[in-house]
Amino acid sequence: MRLVILDNYDLASEWAAKYICNRIIQFKPGQDRYFTLGLPTGSTPLGCYKKLIEYHKSGDLSFKYVKTFNMDEYVGLPRNHPESYHSYMWNNFFKHIDIDPNNAHILDGNAADLQAECDAFEKKIKEAGGIDLFVGGMGPDGHIAFNEPGASLVSRTRLKTLIYSKVPTMALTVGVGTVMDAREVMILITGAHKAFALYKAIEEGVNHMWTVSAFQQHPRTIFVCDEDATLELRVKTVKYFKGLMHVHNKLVDPLHSMKEGN
Image (cartoon, rainbow, N blue to C red; front, side, top):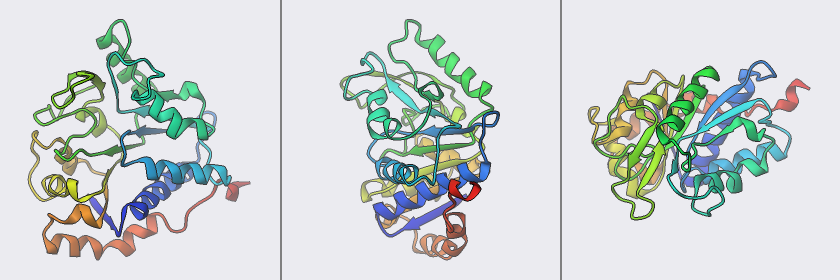
């Protein structure tokens, strides 16, 4: 497990974007070799998405041979509703890059058979060869996607009743087990309001009341956070991981470019 600590939100977002960029380019995707990326919604990844859009517009990064799978979607919201995750992804990311819309997979919360939709989503991930890198955010209560406190740590994509949401009250979400199957997981955590959840995620044991803690047991997990998110961690924990920043920064520096292969 890696914990990457940056000074602020913007630097954490940039580090995460650089890491994603380098992973895609080093993979050398092509017509018969797609890089498969799991993606989150919410406020935390917006800075990361903006940087990825910058890399694309500068010609350094292409998503032509990338397939994406989003974590979740509300049930009953039309796709074009401003609060739907379809709208979020297209407005904040997909419409600004060169991804084939057929390769951008988001759960359909209006499907006639919601369980069949969840099963089909798992099948699509499997047919794509699994997720190479699953990027996620984390809630203040330690949830990932809509796997709220008490969710099974081996869960798969399913219909979930939302405890803290008034409207909508249900969503489709990948399971903790779905994300754990990814070859690599990167969790973005920023802000003092998530500091206690980060403490629970990495300094205490695996606990289904803090579902993000499951990723302690993943062989390749990176938690990327800002200083504010570390406020509940032990001083020696922060000091230890900050002492590894020279190693972590080699993952993003130099920033690779698809121009290099031209």
